[in-house]
Length: 422
Image (cartoon, rainbow, N blue to C red; front, side):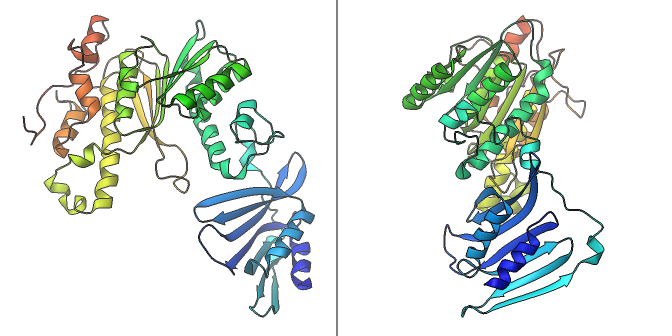
């Protein structure tokens, strides 16, 4: 295998564009079937980022040239049968047959010698919580090692946390600075994001912050409470309960919900609207409600296919939620949370309260709200629509509550959905 080691020595320098190992010799579920390598500059040191693909998982590791040479030399012939190297000076292919015969072919790349490779390390450059800098709660939650290195199987979680903090960074200017900011995280789970938000807003940004995390699992809440006490996060508290029944506050500046399942997202949005929260950040999950109701002759050609029906129903559900938020005095956006390659549940609804507090008129200039028009078209009625129309206490709904304060958003007109039976 001397030819391959020589090829790796020649390729692993600042002139490398990309190196790929493929043709797995022992393919199987969960096994690494491809590796890609590219040069990166980390704090002035030339390293090589090795990306390994195993099933739907992706692992990343930064190695020195010598470490990469040893690791990749061992991989060739044991794990992979083909190596493709693309550098400033040459391109090369190496093949290892089943009998161990090695073939290496090179050709020069004279046209590329004038161009330099991209050595930017964009995995750390744009992150709010930087890789390589240990954060206590990330270490305790298992995302980072004690020296700040991201644990391989939690790399997607690390990216997800940072992406969410970027959305919060965007709305930072509208949060109050003259009083404590109250943030509620519905369905906080293990509270990766809850701790991250507290760390970012209080420790890094210096806001006077009050954070409440709510979840149904008592053991998870107990553990999170112990960690909050350990870090000295005196204004971060966790409590056990159901979103729909939560009465722990009558005001919140920001409401967050990540992957609250099915109609739990609707209850979280409803609570946020009731509190007139300035900011709502919601990543929905498992939207089944519309899927069980939707009936539309014009869409029947698509809805007859189960997978298409499921995905369209989920998209329509989030469109209805965004329309309802618009009608309740918010500017709503539907954004991509993280790349589709990591999870199909990648939609984030971001809603920011308009200063005037009024709902938007129908885009057609008619009295009927967009949400009701869409719901009638689909023959569906969501939980959020029902909550806004008829609250549990029978007092007249969010719109009526807001009217008493002089900031009434556009009312959702009550009425039976087409096809609905008594």
